[in-house]
Image (cartoon, rainbow, N blue to C red; front, side):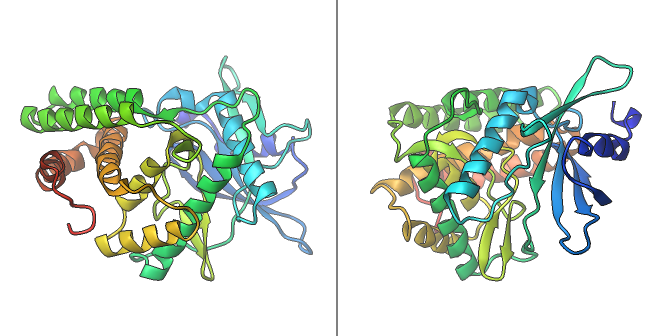
Length: 332
């Protein structure tokens, strides 16, 4: 369907339902969403916005993420973060009907696409590994996100996917499909299956309290935080959902060196304290987040060559230590 849609034309059509006069559309990319930066015509007060068409490339993500109520809930959290904190986030813009999500019918089809407009967040991504100070700032940022959601009263009808045991098992089943193509070996799949079973036992034993479980960003890596001067700013909340706060931390630790993992946790604990047994849980969730990422990539055939190389590396370097109870997060 992508080849049949003029994304620029569709964007201009939807923008007519907002109080925004677009001077320039800059195409950013098409992965989970089709995204544009919108620059306004007002030269005295030039503003920029992020426009999203919630239509992923083929097989990129399950369809639940494009549902109206799910998108609306993401924007409700962003709006609350903007109102309740001094964090700089991509908060949503209402259309002329006073709603955050604008639906548009596709010509000559019965399909409707959901679109959203958010304020642009100024800042620059890192092109190198973060410094220890920057990793500390990102940890502080995540703690402030968790602090907000732990106290925020969810609106009626709020709905986002969960990062729990059931979801992790679904991820494992997506990896099973790679056995038929030889992308993953029977031996490596067996290792991952054992790892997931062990993580599942831990997840089912953990209590879900306001201090341990809530809304999480779930994808706060170097592509989804930027720096403005020395301030870390979060972007792209499209993967946010309910999960353990330690799972959110583990997802970010996957993208940091062992030294920076320590700096990140120090920044986090400057705002929120971690439980006494956090390291063992983090290592389990590190493996869980890795399996989830593998399953995400499994939906994209162009990533299968990468998976065929990375899965054996992970099973040998990390899974073996995890199953033996050997610490690896801060000394690998």
